[in-house]
Length: 511
Image 1 (cartoon, one colour):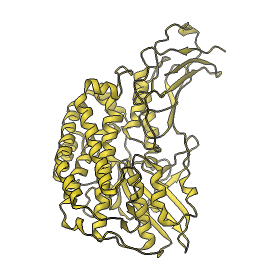
Image 2 (image 1 turned 90 degrees about the vertical axis):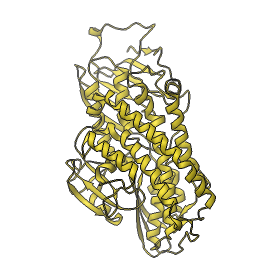
Image 3 (image 1 turned 30 degrees about the horizontal axis):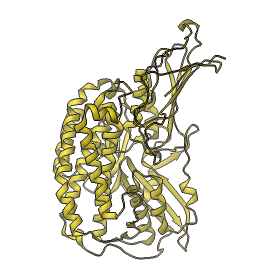
Image 4 (image 1 turned 120 degrees about the vertical axis):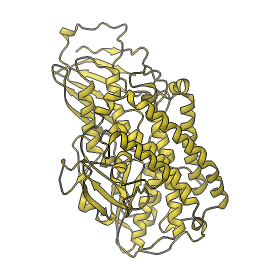
């Protein structure tokens, strides 16, 4: 068996933000003539880069190099649903926030809301306002991370840019103002979380029954002082992105650009909700499928299927069944299901977005656009909350024991609807837990989207780096959070292998 390793000159990583590199110049090696090579069968992207967590993609090709099948594999097991069994319910927010180091606030809030139901309490008004405030700050920092640090190398430098420069280091050289804006915006969100909760990561401030401490008036004043600058950053970025959009016609046409249902939280008036509200499902044509679905009734509408090629479950709309009941969540879906945002600047941007792309926006490429509109909404909502005199009230926690043996909490995480559902015994010990994370809802759509992008950009028997980058960029558009992860300089991002029909490895690129 002959195995050849390419040196991949010029494709070395400049940072952990580097690309899922597909092909490279095979310098210094003898390459068999094209006619002598076995038919190319499989391309594997072993590590999808610039996402939170670990995933790989398998692309299968026929003898002519046409895509015949694709698979999106989530390759890690977390196990939280099982190892929390037997723990006291009031420990659940602290435990489940460790699921993710990027969005621990989301798990804290969904878990605490489920525990509120077990306690059968209505939390104080100021506590609800403070929970929403810290949640909005998390949206700002998370959306800034996704747009500026994880996707901007593709969006601002170009999908076809030299992968040695298509990373944050390249952004620093070519778009220093945008990169500085991204750093400043994420810093703002993180600092608000730290001022409120005393810790940026895994704080213990959000608890069953409310929050631990009241708002410091100085924190309120400082946050209000910094909000205009953060809003200006998002508005500048929206203007930049709207000018750049016309440069991506093929990506818009092929990044999960197919009809699905959409799901997200809305208020009684149909406005966008991030912390509180009920679920709404709409069809691809905008017609209402189900509205005001209460958290405790989610299982009537959402089923979960296990996948043979992934550890990530695949939720689906239960009345339609699996897999036809595909739906999407997250920024794109939330703007599709909501009648309005509910804040003036975000509503104006939403109107312009819909005027350009329609009332229901299908292309997954526009998750980036929707993310920026939501960041603006989150900042405006923070300003509204801080203007409420009641947010300074000192009653911020309700105390109770076990009054219900079951509780469900739903919030909108930055990546989509997050569900925590617990059952306890009379002593308050967890007997059963079900967690449906935001990325799980999008599993079917991501898998189908990978196939669509691969069919659009991959053909023939040579791996094109730019084509494989677009496959990975489709995944990044959803900003999947498969677990908390760390992006480091100097870590290999991808290994790709070409195999013949008999399993012979005849081309391998490791970078």
